[in-house]
Image (tube, rainbow, N blue to C red; front, side):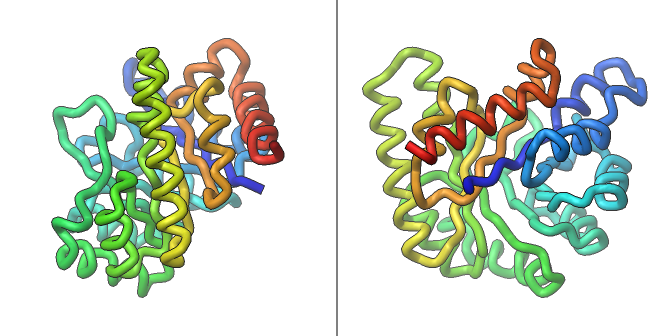
Length: 245
């Protein structure tokens, strides 16, 4: 079965807009678990714009699902990850001025630095994932430095679909398929995520090499109308249908 990781960052975004204790990201994580999520993703950004240190503390204490801890490749974040030792650590590029993660890591251009950075995390027992584009050079560099997982960035594919640029969307989807095949052939576990919706998840879920999708913003948005349980169950059903087909 294709796993679903639910990203709870934007539950914290809503909370932080008013500076109240609610909605509580931990409560959302527990609801996601009961709705059929296979894991929880939370991104502790350097500017703490949504998830906070206290959220990570609470998730590590209460969750029974695996936590995928997204973070930038900084000494501060490495120390936090080593203190908590979550199931998985996903290294993502991060810029203060961006609205959201805009692309993948340049692993090929920072191979030595990233190899040194992830070594203590691997030794601590964390599964290290690198959030990258589908370019062969990035996939091959990820395998060389010892990452267990790569997560392919689906943001461009989703944006092209939303904009109605279907020929470019189809080319991006083909490149994601080729990237997944290459990564799998190199012994990497392959995940994907960013921007996926009910309309775009099917062709991604159908890529046979993928083991996991990580989806957040759309599910939190859709929960306004369906509730979080209903939004997750609908996404799970669409993923399963695409994989079965």
